Image (cartoon, rainbow, N blue to C red; front, side, top):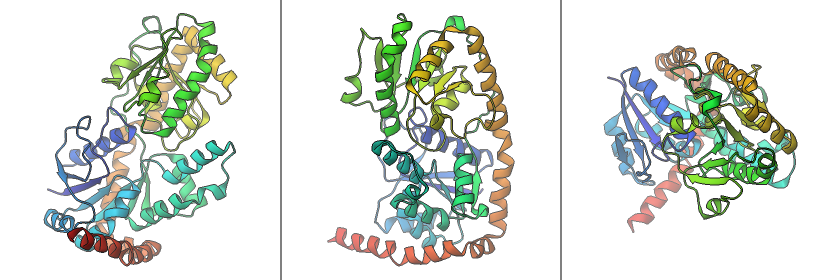
Length: 400
């Protein structure tokens, strides 16, 4: 039986984060192909994490080297660039023949550039992308044998703008196994909903935007309410709760499918971010049309009609939210659009074969694959002579 070792910054929380859902999908892919899976992490986020078999590791400790030599897997999967940065050099030293895969989740440098532009109230320029996160993240991409890219926009950005060799990249979005049409009709739904993990800054900014525009929606729909769900809501989030305004902060969502089948419209005025938006993908699956922004819908529908509306101005966002809430015809059309998007972009069967074909090709020609990635070899050499010795120094310091 082949063996996959995942090194995770945190234990997956699929009910709380899109990243957690993504990791569980990747684990399922390997499990279906009969891989034994070992999940290693230094994290302690146990309470809301998925019930998977986890082994604890320590940062800057040679016990990690002994552990992975004993495990001796065929493949290592890093759940984001900072995990590869911390442990990648140890993997290369202790298990040099194992394939190294990086799941980027989204491009963190792109998200950071957009965050900074949002704060500074300006448009993102190409030079903004080449920030400190870019240098670290691209180094991790180049050091790995394969990087999984969740967004087609980000995939094209890496290839066309930054000239990353497509042989070390693979586009693989969220995977939908069961694509069905909506079963809960317009007439049985009511109110608006927003959802998002509050450890993620764009979700907090989304809720602040909703707070600022909600009165305009409520003025025309006085019976409607907006329910805000999200894990890790802090006091500042709960301070926005206002019964009189119909702006209700609900906290953690225990069952997303149940919640999404209750409401009529999802509101997601996402101001910045990267990757794919898990809430919008789930809204398509559960028959919940949405109103979002260009950033929110990025890379999620190609040229297909959206399952709702995409609006960046506050005025048009409010107008379309009200229109979609009131029109059963538009609402049903939005759900038809969602069905087509899921079939053409997120059907699991579109990607499984390509995934295993690429893994097999790398496995059969690993050294040749690495030799062609000469920049990766250079960066690997320098990491072993910088990160390695810093980590060894910390180990010695900790012993004393």
